[in-house]
Image 1 (cartoon, helix red, strand yellow):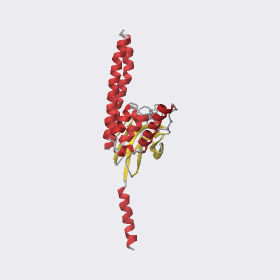
Image 2 (tube, helix red, strand yellow):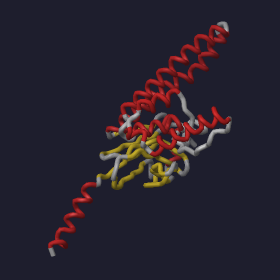
Image 3 (cartoon, one colour):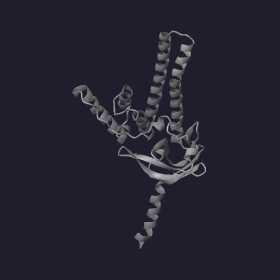
Image 4 (spheres, helix red, strand yellow):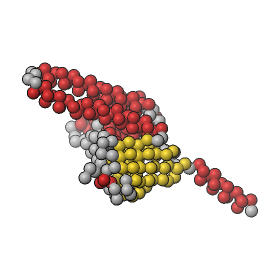
Length: 256
């Protein structure tokens, strides 16, 4: 009888150990209204559905149990919209044609502060082509233009590298570090070793190195490096999860 009496108590304690996530979202993008949204988490290099909901009159809501903090992606059908950190607390998502942001919890606030800074640098880099056209219209010598804009581009690129490196270093031991690492490496056709990646891995903690995505990417990149340098073979192509929306959040939001 005592065992039967204690069983509900034990189950209650176990249930209380699992926290929950709550996501409240709003959208002014008409293409999202009436559609189903999905939260997808990476597993075996693929994004798998873990939750879904409908967008009704510009509002949507996700809720569920959370056994561990994780970074997921918000999808509409097969289109990645934006990254979200599922953690304890009231998570808010705001989507409009100009900006999208996740906030309300510490890691989401930190992630989107980083994304905003990264996007500012991306915009500065994109503005250089407009600046080039303007300088040519003003009759400035092409060699002078190229020299000046190359210096500006290098300065922006170095600032971007420092931003990414600092953020990943500060978050080696939580989901943000591997998550942003995935964002910056998903742009490559196949895993490669860049000076930035080598710098990250030289400073990385054991926990970061053992993250499944990081570990798989780095091992394959090292093998590709040997294959290209030693044997002249083509590098191994590995399908990496698409997360371009994470580095440029508005890229994949349907606007029609």
